[in-house]
Amino acid sequence: MKILEITGGQKLSGTIRISGAKNSAVALIPAAILAETETTICNIPEITDTDNLCDILNNLGVKTKRASESIIIDSTNMQNQVINEEFSKKLRASYYFMGALLGKYKKVTMHFPGGCSIGARPIDLHLKGFEALGATVKKEENKYTVEADRLIGCPIYLDFASVGATINIMLAAVKAEGRTTIDNAAKEPEIVNVATFLNNMGARITGAGTSTIRIDGVKHLHGCFHEVIPDRIEAGTYTIIGALCGENLKIDNIIPEHIESLTSKLQEIGAKLEIGSDYITISRSENYKATNIKTSTYPGFPTDLQQPFSILLTQCNGKCKIEETIFENRFMQVPYLCQMGADISVKNQTATFIGPTKLKGKEVVATDLRAGASLVAASLIAEGTTKITNVEHILRGYENIVEKLTQVGAKIKREEI
Ligand code: EPZ
Image (cartoon, rainbow, N blue to C red; front, side, top):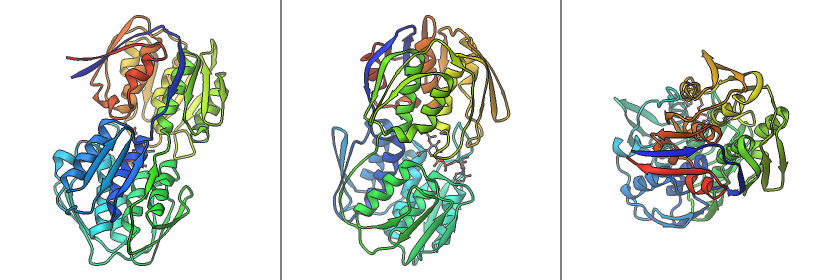
């Protein structure tokens, strides 16, 4: 098992360069099979999630070539075959192969695991979209077979603006006959990045980034060159760390508009930050005002940043609240933060913080990706040394986190036990 050992109290200065967005890359890699010729995607983060998706591609006979931060994908000789649980259970985003294989072959059979630690995470909206396009869905235990004689474009309304369902329906609809309209579509920047990739292949998608996306089906899609957008959640995580213990810490290669909900919240509590065209510079302030957070879909405050942000709330003067509206179980870092000295109570979907509190290094466990990231942030300001186990969760979504933090002055090391 991999662990991180972090000694708190260091001021972090220098520059952290943000990598490509995990939540875009994990959709772009399956989407690439829709092209009949070779695609090149650059700025792909080197994390276990992208490695696991390449394993699925290779298992389908797709040739992949990894250069640093880019990947060449050639599906010329691929075969459509069952995606077994050994592959699909490694990450939830494997479900994008449902839309991609349905869109390419009109049939997909894959094992797909149920929820995960942060919630049930059903895929009913994905399946409803596939059925609306004319597919039948057969479920045997956790094996899904989705197939259609023809995929016919149609209007689809999403009961919830689901990121995954929006992307998966796009992947299934790009080669359907006629027009598909997705209403109440998710508006996250990653959706725009995927739609742009598909349009570069020759698809006809308009409205991505708004709540109404129109897809006019085409017969053929060709290879192209594409770039992953910077990871707004990684950028937000390091910006929060800068607010906790930075000294002119520069977070570089970002799209500031993508984390406007975070930067405006940081300014509200009194953080000292400078927002440039593609960077943020931030330093720790001595006094942070209390505030409240309510997570919501983009452009609201992202659920993926509420866990890292919770560390800042332990340092604010007074009472703060976080209301988590997207996932049902996303406060799993709280017991560990309380062990470290935080004063937090959780009732239903709301966590209440009384601050400021001094944090002390302890032995803690990363229960999920963003909880793990929040424990890294807490360790950096805690007195003494913190050991975090189960860090595979963290390495899934933060490229070179140890190297990036070390180079700005953090005392952090990765060990195998
Ligand atoms: C994506 O998950 C991200 N993952 C998540 O990031 C992110 O938290 C989430 O969007 C919200 O922004 C990837 O992009 C790989 P949803 P996704 O479908 O697509 C319910 C991280 O830390 N729902 O928008 O699964 C669902 O249960 C991860 O990087 C249904 O009920 O999110 C949840 O409560 C965590 N039925 C809510 O919608 C469905 O068919 C949001 O889910 C689909 C979703």
